[in-house]
Length: 168
Image 1: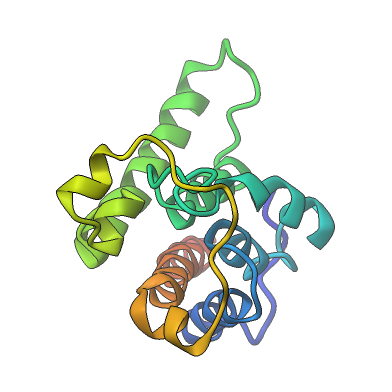
Image 2 (image 1 turned 180 degrees about the vertical axis):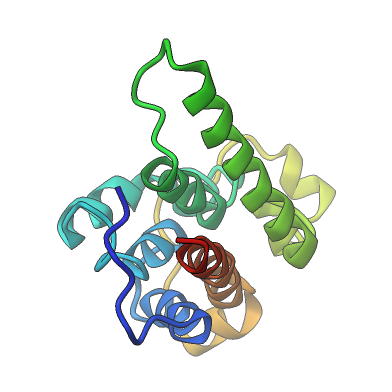
C-alpha cells in the first residue's frame, strides 16, 4: 500500500522532515506520519487527525511514545493485516512493528515516553498530567529529546523502505 518512493527519497531527508514537523508544532506521532505523507495512501489531513491523540505518549499519559505509535501505523501500510483470518499477514505486521520497536529502543533507550523524557519515579506515579499541551518555546525544545526522537523514528522507517525498495 506504500506508493513508489520518489527519486529524491533519502534517510536524511525523511529524518529532517520528521524533526521539522515537530519543530513546526505537530506532536511526535503526527510529525513522523507527516514525514511520509507523500508515499502513504492517505492525505495529510487524515494523518494529522489520526496522529493527534498519540502525542505525549498517548494523550500526554507518557506511555508508548508517539513516534513508536506512528511507526506502528506506517507498518500497517507497509505490511497490511486487514483480514483477521489471515494469520500470516498479522504475523508479518507484528514482526515489522517489533523490528521498528527494537531499532527505536536501541537508539532511544525505550519506547515509553516517560522513560525517553527521563521523568523521575515520582512523576511516573502521578496519575494523569494535564491534557493541555506544553507551551512550545526555545526552552521546551532545548529540554526535550522529542525532535530527535521524531528524526530517529523517521530514519528507521526510511531505512526500512529503502531496503525493501532495493529488493524489488
